[in-house]
Image (tube, rainbow, N blue to C red; front, side, top):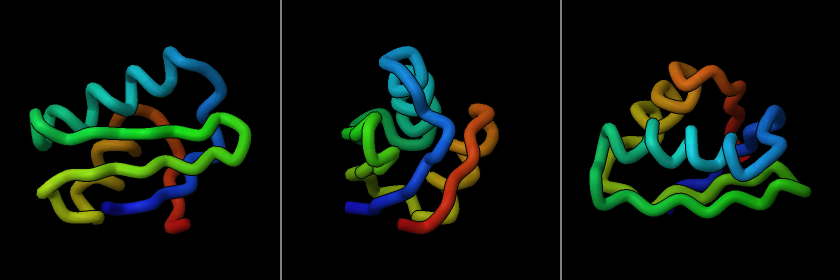
Length: 65
């Protein structure tokens, strides 16, 4: 499981966009987001670098948590 800080997530729409981006890498991936802390947990077989890039390509800022 990987943990990321995504400071510009604000709503469930953002979470859906992130989930779609991650599932484009791994269709079995799961994502949990805490909108208050801006923490995103991703359970996937994809590398952290690939997940971070997918989050960026979806239009979000991503930082290591």
